[in-house]
Length: 474
Ligand SMILES: *[C@@H]1O[C@H](CO)[C@@H](O)[C@H](O)[C@H]1NC(C)=O
Image (tube, rainbow, N blue to C red; front, side, top):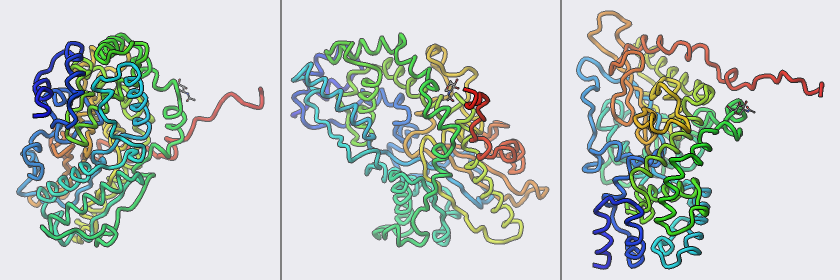
């Protein structure tokens, strides 16, 4: 066995510093990547937005195509009439920016400790990869399609295939995710037959709509006050130089045998990302994982969550308000289906699939009041936030999905009770924010969110406040 010693080392979770020397020399002898072992998996709960979908739904590790039927899903007297799904793209490559930083760190290691395993470990990421969907990501989408089709057979019927509506962000990884999802459905209808090109499929290729799926790029107030504002992410920057990060930096520097002053939070974060990318993309346990222990992983997870919190979550009101149009769009679809059903017409769009980003889902979930902690996440309350609700790895892993299911219920006493709604997050029923119940009357849900449905106009929300200092006075 070429890599015998490596596999043994991978079997225990030891403090990084203690393991480092042994790892660095033993990995140098190994050219074949090992399958993911316990070390990488011990860190995987802390990968934030780079978490594999199956780490959130561990049942999928055994059988990724078996539908997971949440026992709280409505059955019997209610029939699903429409499904609106917001789906984050599947597993992707690192961005060119992340690859650039990784190359910088790799260069540092080659200069400082040549011959060490990490310096020898090939960098298999190249600039062209820039955030694109990987084969594993296509598989994430095909398998999700198969499971959803099995879970809602009446909606994903062969007859409905031509009426599917696909809307996507313009990013390649989202367009490709939509196409892979369609191929999964094709596989469901025609097992064994090779799928046609998406352009030739009945429902046509996914339609690009960035105003809907990348609303954050179109909201002037968000861009000015948050995205392009250096001080808006104050807590992220402060945490990078705070005591928890200093402690992690020291440990990682010792493990890598480089001076602490050569490292910073951004560089070790990219090393941590690489550990997660190697696991998600290649299914291998990367030596980049071995420089971290669980405590370091928790610190780096918090850094990632802090950024999401201040940029996409509750940190600033505009983060979530910028998603009002998307929220209203979902309810327009549901309204239309209700109307058609009430007139005994066929529902024109029984299945609506919208492909976007973690940055699409997080603001929407925040707008709806989910995963809100009592205290904000700051640079100074790491310990207190240890059991926070806002953990992006649990909410928006790769291929994460938020699904609205509208039901028509036959035996209801009054007409208003005919329509009910359930929400699913990552295929698990998400209790409604207003009642904590697994299902709601459609009217009650609309009533709960009436402020957002009626009084949130993106054009107004995203308008920049008028400058009150008059420039002509100066
Ligand atoms: C940038 O963010 C800070 C902190 O939220 C805020 O006080 C400031 O007004 C913002 N700057 C702009 C130009 O919006």
